[in-house]
Length: 282
Image (cartoon, rainbow, N blue to C red):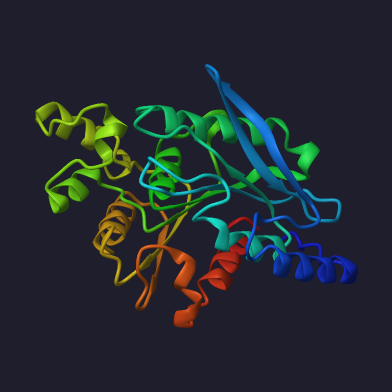
C-alpha cells in the first residue's frame, strides 16, 4: 500500500486555525485555489476550487459534486462538510460547479461532471493528483451525477471509485412517490408527466445503467431520509452486487437528508469515508 504523507506540524496548526475561521464563510485554508475554469459551455464558465496538500504526491484525488435538486447550489454549498476531513486526510480534492436546470436541461450537468474528470486527469501533475486514483463524491442530485458518471464513464471519463450520498438512483421512484415532476421537470425539459417523461426519467437513472465491471461504490444514507428514502440505496446496492460489482452501504442511524447534522448524531461517517477511500485506492 502506498503510504500517505503526514501533515507537517506547521500545516496542521494553520489548517486548524483556518478551518475555525472559515466556519461562517467560504472555505479557505492553506493549499486552496479558487475559481479555476475547467470548461466553457457556450457562454457559461465552469469553475472549481482545488485543495492541494503539502508533500510531493501524487495523492488520492477526489472530485466533489454538490446537490440541490439539480436546480440550485454551487461548489461551496451542501457538500462542504467533506472539505475538512478530506483535507486532514491529505487528499487532493476539487469541488465543482455545473450547469443547473431549468436553464440547462439534461445532459448539461452530466456533461459538466465528465468535463471535470477529463480536466483533472489532464492537469493531474500540476495539482499533485493521481489520475489512477480518482474518486467521485456527490450528495443528493450530485450523488445521482457521480453515480451516472461511474456507471457510464469509460476511457478519459472513467474513475477508480464512486461515493454517492443519499442519491436518487431511480428518478421514476422519486416521481411516483411525489406524484409530480417538481424540479425534475426542468431537468428533462417538460412539465407534463406523460409517457415520454417517464421514459426520459428511466433513461437517465443510474439504476438502469448498471453492468458488470463497474468501479467500487460506497453509498452513505440516513435511515430517516424522507427526501430520498434509504430504499434507493438498498435497491442500487442489490443491483450492483447482482452484476458482480463491489457496492458497500453505510447507514446513518437517525440521519435525514443532508449530511450537515450527521455528526451531531454521533456518526463517524467522515472517518469511515476516509478509511474506505484509503483502502480502495491503495
